[in-house]
Image (tube, rainbow, N blue to C red):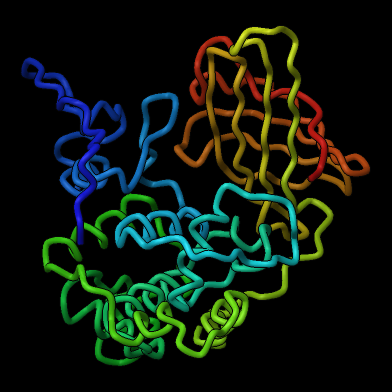
Length: 341
């Protein structure tokens, strides 16, 4: 694996006794965090970034599109000449990474749907995607065993050890940012840089298969229990945006973006950002649905108090911040009415 030369590693803070030593300036990653070294490594080689508020959010769940970016960056996969033709045609920041992974036939769910991309990625999907690139075409059990044999990952449910491999590994559990970065760091330590012959042949594409065909084959390679090819029909799910340019300067604008996924009859997952020119912030968490058109979130995924009220309109989402000061920079908030994209 070629290492990226334009490293972005910030100096490690060395401070007096009694203060927390932080990883690359991330105020929520102390030196004694289990993923401290992995996060330093991942930022050094531009595999992962932090948030605008100076945090890394190591315990935040990771979506499939965020995982796709990390995996494509780890292997420095080249972009194909063509692009995926999606069912949701709106451009998405993750398009580049899904195009690159599709050219290698990597097993993922979200190639054709932006909504699926924003859902939390399951441990079983991560296992099959990594094993495909490192070890060739593998079923779910083979992929899990590969990760366990090389201590790239471990099991989560000890009561099933030597009894049920998938339950022991926790295939349906969500993954956190710190967990995924730790897995990639262990791959680096074990010199798993080379792409498997199987994935390489898909990329060489001697049969001239379209990028969509290779992506679909990757989807089908996922274990049936891991496949998520039909998005929820909940009216809450979707991408919402607001942008207003009020002057001619480069910072004379207001922007709000929100992504709602995993909606059920009771709750949904929310990730949103706010940028008011020079001030920016982000927040993610779970909101409770209180009626057909209203919902409320009381705390962020970090456990901080963060009260947001949501009201769903036709093709729009009104968001009102009541108190969420610990989750964004001073000078901005998450309020506004955003149009559904």
